[in-house]
Length: 106
Ligand code: TYC
Image (cartoon, rainbow, N blue to C red; front, side, top):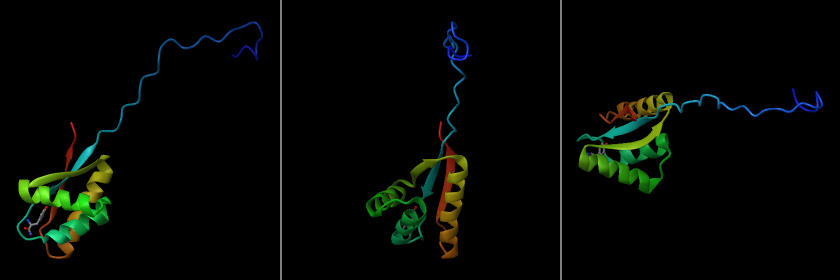
């Protein structure tokens, strides 16, 4: 009850902070290299599904091309899995083995 409701009283601040709400864990979306998907197609998919710009997309594509894989971005689990599937399906629809996977961030 506040001092206004009940004159002559004071309101004590709570001494114990409430338990903090944990952040949701984040999931990485990872682009895997393959020998068949054209570079330009990979760039188009990265732009369309992950909203990367041209130079970001190109760099991610080249990193996967040279190292075998590249982390694109992190999202909540649902969003990461949906985007990975959407991007993989775009490859499949065009006859390419392009593959995106997800992994929990530690
Ligand atoms: N390696 C492919 C090529 O030489 C291009 C490519 C890059 C494919 C990245 C997939 O994740 C990938 N045409």
